[in-house]
Image (cartoon, rainbow, N blue to C red; front, top):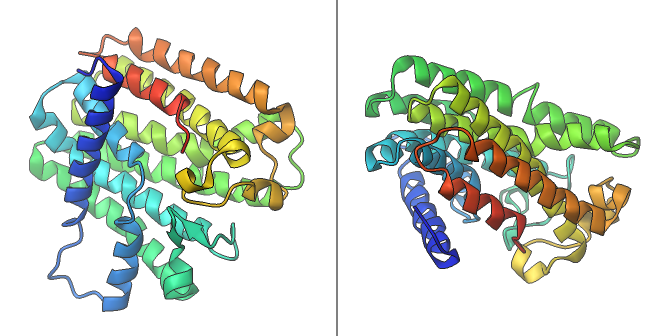
Length: 304
């Protein structure tokens, strides 16, 4: 696995390109889809970004099994989680939600295609994710593992997970007064999809229960650290690197970690959560946990 910062950057770049190549053929060209709907879907799905969630799927599979065949088998799960993530961004940007005009340095989907088509594009990606995940069975992932992944995707991305977290966020924006309330929202809005990514990669590599639990704990802590880092960057980041406006949380009067505990304490929490994530996988008897350890450090130190 990777041993230096440069090698990690190369790995992330290569895996991002691999995911993006797979996504280009994820929606069959011979399907009858209204042209504007297909264009709206592809506008957001192919907009770039870090692709960290699908990379986590592949990295987890590699950390457990360490062979190219396992990475290939895990790819449908990687594409599925990126579709879910992309749909959530399209919907989050809508006027009824966060009302954002810019995403990844470009106008948001509804600014280009209108609100109705943006909603439908998100709906289409959400549904397509489950079709895509099911295709892993064709690549040799056992049927019981595929079923487990689809069940977990429904839960982590759905009502008790990401969607429920978004609802709590909207309903409680002005009423959040404790870290416990804020953490619960972040764990569901952000961590749950990362937990799914790690566990999906583990399922593709046919991990044991203890390994899946460790991968899930890693995802929980890394995901929460990722969201806190986002809150920090919204206040102190470089807009040209972020690809979206800074201080948007403050302008919308959102309660964030820096708002409740300050920037310094928020940074300390990112470090602590990252250390706890690394401890979880270091002792999980994975084939080679080094890759996940390095990605955790990379995420904690990111500036965009």
